Structures are given as C-alpha cells and as structure tokens.
Image 1 (cartoon, one colour):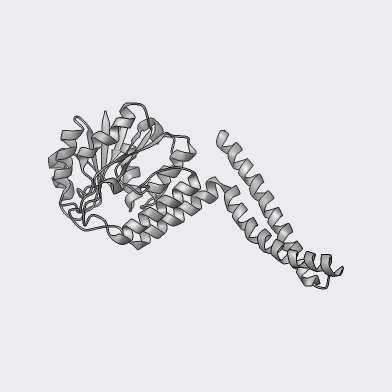
Image 2 (tube, helix red, strand yellow):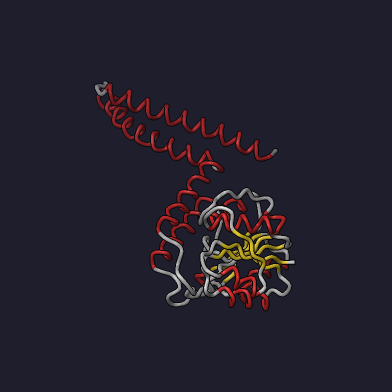
Amino acid sequence: MNTVIIPTKNEPGITKVIELIKITVPNAEIIVVDKSTDNTPTIAKKAGAKIVYQKGNGYGSAYITGFNEAKGETILMIDGDMSYDPRDFKKILKPIINNEADLVLGNRFAGLKKGSMKLTNKIGNKFLTRLLNKLYKIDIQDSQSGMRAITKKALEKLDLQETGMPLASEMLIEAVKKGLRIAEVPISYNPRIGKAKQNVYNGLRIASTTVRMIRDYNPLTTFSIIASAMIVPGLIIGVDVVIQWLTQGIITRIASVVLSSMLILTGVFTFMIGLMIDLIVKEVRKK
C-alpha cells in the first residue's frame, strides 16, 4: 500500500488534488496534515482523506507528523495547491516499483509552466541544488522539489529534525549519508491555486541547514576550509621572508616570520583536529 501525505494550510485546490491522487494511485492512504484556519480539513475529509492536525509549525513539522501516521510501504509527498500534478506520481513511483531507487525526486525544471515559479525562487533553487551537488557529490537538478517518494524502510533510516522548509534538503542529505539510492524523474510544475507560502527567509534557512549539516556530517571539510584560510596567508607571508634570506642572506622581517609561523602551525593544528573529529564521527556512525 502507498501513503500520500499532503500538508495543508488554507488550500482551495485540495479537492482536485485528492481526486487526481485517487485516480493515479488507487487504494492509497491519503493523509492531509492540516494547519488551516478555513474549511480545508472538512473539504479534504469529504473528498476521502484522513485528517491529521499538525503538531508544531512549519513544512517539516507537517511531514514529520504525517510520517508518524503513515502505514504504507511507500510514502508519497505532494503539496495541496495543485502546483504539482498528482498524475506525475506514476513516473515518481516507477523507480521504486522497479527496485531502482529508495528515494525519488520530481524535477520541476523539466516541465516548468509559465508563471509557476518566480525568478528569485528559480535562482535560489538552482543555487541550493548546485551547493548540495558539489558538497555531497550527487547529481540532481531540483533538490527542493516537494514532490517525492520514499520507501518506508528508507524513511526509518533517516534522522529528520527540521521543522521548516529545510526538511527537503535534510532528507536528501540524510539519504546520501545513509547510502540510499536516489533517483530523479521529470515532472510538471504549475501555477498554484491559492497564496504562496514561501519567502526569502525560508531560502536562508535552507542554506543555513545545508552548511550546518556539512559541519555535522563532514567536520573534516569544515576544518579544512578554516585551516586553509590560515595556512595560505601564512605561506604567502613566509615566501617573502624566504626570498629575502635567499637573495640577501639575512632576515629583517621578524614580525613576518612570527606571523607566518603562527598561521601555518595553527592551520596545521586545526586540520589535525578536524581529522580526529572526522574519524570519531565515522566510528560513532558505524555503531
């Protein structure tokens, strides 16, 4: 059985979303995790969905609430504003049905309809996706897509804690770290029915989460950057001192010698600390 989770907050298009899900994914358990101030839950229940009232606030909290309620072997995620077409679930589910993936993302940029995404959101999405691709050595086109599917077994391996929009990045990063198979398929993306709920603050939170998870999962990367920021200037300053010694046979820039030595030694020490922490983190994860 499949479970479809839909976070809602005043969604005038919810009936259409549920109707298309019922056609595309027959016999699915449809869970609407609601935080509305209008009659969205009443309409959704009438359309055939199970209503669960959201615990906490935010996009991430809605899904975590839904995950805890889901009974299906595969969990499907979609928004309640018809920006994603539920009929694309056929493509989303295919890699899982064929045992080719544990987590499947829908690539909105493959079928982006006019007026469906603001330019600022496009730029933000592309930046965050490139950042994730580079830092976590993956190759996807749309890391922030809200239409995705994950097997229940794979979901249980993830430690998801983000309560807001960064959950999308956290899920992907966790999947990479847990060695899950990730696939991406082209989907359409349409102008939403109702008001947009994203803002610049959400984008900053997502970027912050990405950087934080680099620190937590790849401490060596973080410490290497800090170490390089000290070693490189130290070497640059030291080169002048060495050149003076080689050409003149004397060293007059004592302050430069001290500064160069301090920067290089501190940088090396920082790198060694990062290496030790990285080894400890890897050993802890093996347990």
